[in-house]
Amino acid sequence: MEPRSLTPGGRVAYPYAVITDLDRVVELVREGDLLVLSGAGLSTESGIPDYRGPTGRQRESSPIQYREYVSSAEARRRYWARSAVGWPFVRAAQPNAGHRAVAAMEHAGLVHGVITQNVDGLHHVAGSRAVVELHGSLASVVCLSCGTSESRDQLQQRMIRANPGWDL
Image 1 (cartoon, rainbow, N blue to C red):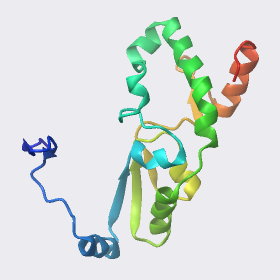
Image 2: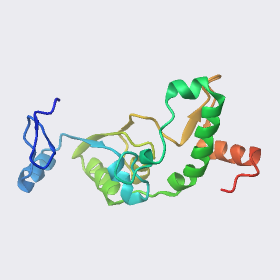
Image 3: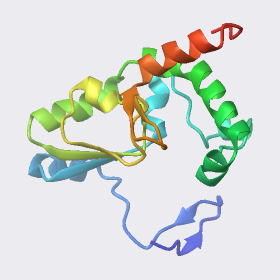
């Protein structure tokens, strides 16, 4: 949906009503036909920094785009070196109260699905079952050449063995 205008504070105003009445939110939850959309902000409380926020990683370096990744061995080395450093933090992250609340609402029949941009798998760990991960999951990797799949933990161990100079 296209923004309609900017508010005096510089925020975008959209042409739909924002629900600010807590009673209406409670009523919607009780009706039960809810779908949760989540993104990086949900996982920041679990210690996973967002990518585009004020302290996000995008400010430190540019992401490697798919075209660059598939066409450049150097880009692939850079991607996997950065990934090797970051994986232990993602792997150790635990669901927070937000993830657990979504799972509890799903189990109670109030939420019928979760669509997330997150790749951390924390919705699953919290107990949500009907999860669509728009950007996939870091928990497994697939070779773009042969299609072989393996767990990210297995790949991490292979990378560490192949790069003994890495201090992870």
